[in-house]
Image (tube, rainbow, N blue to C red; front, side, top):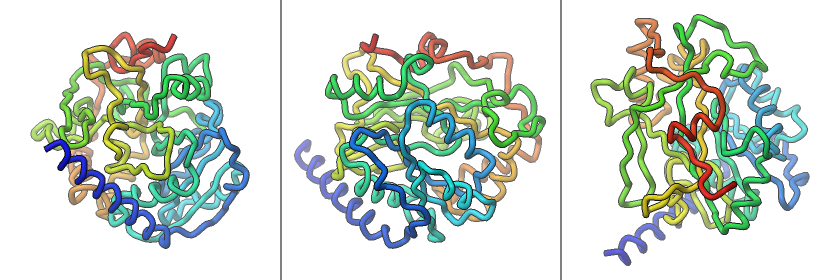
Length: 336
């Protein structure tokens, strides 16, 4: 059975690599600065649509961590996102008006771009509302982490998606361009998470948090997955299978200790719940470009009619990565 499963996964990986190769035709270069990428540069990859208000802080955050180059796909924005990114000296920008859904929610586009530009580099795949936090991130650059991973022969690094939210109503405080979103969305759920092992791909499947209790309380099994493997020492033979939730080859998904110990891991602070969220949810529901007939955005739209407050008296206010480690949401493992 193990041999058959491995064979099927190899065929699946081959199929997705071919698919990514074909989808390259959907991408139009707007600003190609890839010749500036140096051998050891860490590269961020991301897809977006109409995220102009978020982009200034997003770029600054990752530049401050030590990211050298950004390769981004703009999916038909009309709010100035494309023009802003095209002017950034460390951004390579591609544009497409093709279907996000038919590209497997952007996975095909990024798989192709990583095949072409990320081979031999540490690649970090994040959305523009996700902020990578890792052990010692307040004192050590991202290069220190990737150097340690290289020295330890570790090819992939896991991070749990941690939904952040404000204390009051989502729409109460306006978010300003360039602002740290955690100044507004500074709270999170410390518990309320379930973990299951995906037998096919070997990754952990994590659900829960505020989206499960607020938007999927009647059907928690439909709540979004929170497990991600965003940081990978990329090889052109690799592919993401479903967003950054799982990869092939299967071994890249083993970012946890199977024997009960703790592997080094991080978190992605997910600043989704700002005052921009209601408008974004309505737009994405109209477009119908998201997973499972946009079931996630249907749940958001239904709940947002009542102007919900996500905060509860059990919510925790974010301080730093050490707090997340104490709560068991990430671990420094053997990295000291």
